[in-house]
Length: 88
Image 1 (cartoon, rainbow, N blue to C red):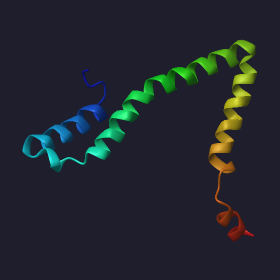
Image 2: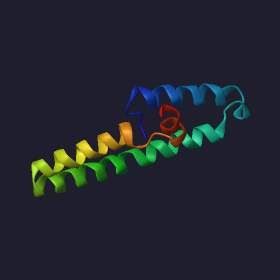
Image 3: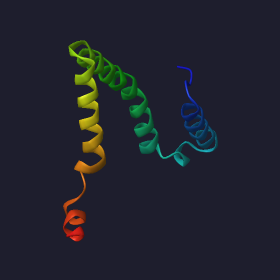
């Protein structure tokens, strides 16, 4: 249960300070979003690490190629259609 990063400390402090004055002064939906992000971060990071390890076992070049393709897609492959049409 202890905070493990400055983000944990800051967001936990803000929620605690707000709750100490009035419980309804905290936006609990936002607090739930923050906590759920904390819960899913570690398993998702472990999954990415496991997939990377498995790809590297096939060949380091496979890992490099998959990583490059993913980065390319994240940078250029997801642009909204309206942006692509406006450029033409």
